[in-house]
Length: 144
Image (cartoon, rainbow, N blue to C red; front, side):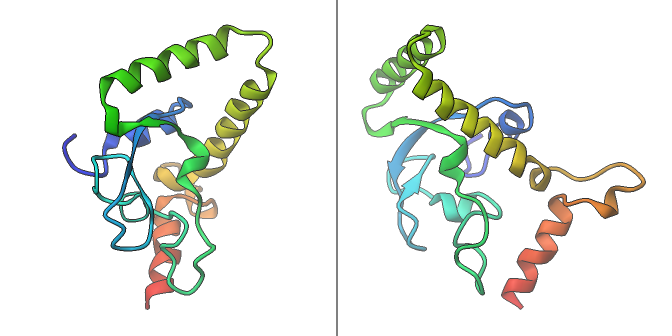
């Protein structure tokens, strides 16, 4: 759990949970402005497979990880986490927050769309469907 890429992040998405992540400025070595790890940490482009900007021949290919997460200001620590959690509770319990509910529904839809490339197909017919292996092959083709 101390590295930039963490299994629990992918587990959350594959189980239909929207990750709540701290947002920091990244080291911007690759031009991606965000890190979920620590201040000036690994950028989201380096950390998450198939992120926008990771395909050498087509920078617009891939998915925007920000479409699937809820963020809070990581630089102020637990105080910001507490207020972010309180806000989420209010949003989820409020019938007047239709706009926020729509945002959450859109994040869940994006997660469903991208979940296939975050797991390995295990069925005998899995070679006919997009999974992490086929996405890795496509990604490699962009670098060769």
